[in-house]
Amino acid sequence: MNTSTPQPAAYTQVIIAAVIAFFMLLTRGSHVLTSVSLPDASLALLLIGGLYLRKAAWFALFVVLATAIDFGAAAIDSIQAFCLTDGYWGMLPAYAAMWLAGAWLGKQADSTDIAKYTAASVVSTFAAFVISTQTYYLFSGRFPDAGIVESLKHGWEYLPSYMGFTAMYLAAFWALTKALPKLHNAIKASSSANVA
Image (tube, rainbow, N blue to C red; front, side, top):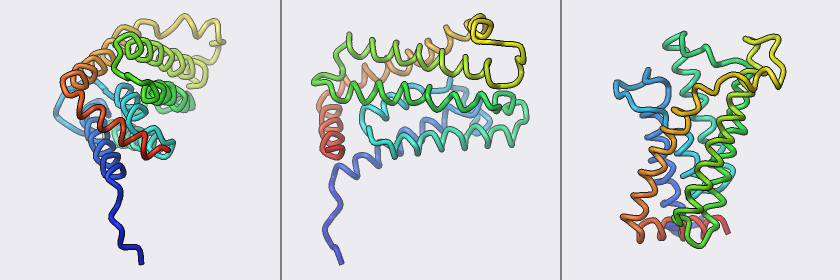
């Protein structure tokens, strides 16, 4: 029987995952699950997850959680089921764009460098928007005559809120990492040790 104590890095990752899951539950599901009316933080949370957790298993856990929240919200309120079509599968690569941006930041010597952090945040959020919007318009079945060129004409009215809310959360996270650099660096170092 192995009586060795678990590594601190594993504890750190579980705590980070629990915090991410808490905020995903708090902000996702169009507020069917809570009375708090906060914008969805899932994209920002996935970037943060990629930054600190990196492993594909954690990514899969959060995809399952997001999907469970969406289908749970749809079961409670049928209006929430409107987007649960074949186009919903486009969320997987959209989420992956955010996770991979976070993982890339995690490999940088200074993951809070404003230029790198902003570039990773903006590029990944825009990519997630294009992927999720286009897969919805192409594969949802709600726009039967829409080809790629036609689908590119739709959905852009959602870009400001999509980018804006994610930027708001990522800016708050960046400010927190700058306010608590020792904690950020310790978590990042712990995560790097657990990935190796």
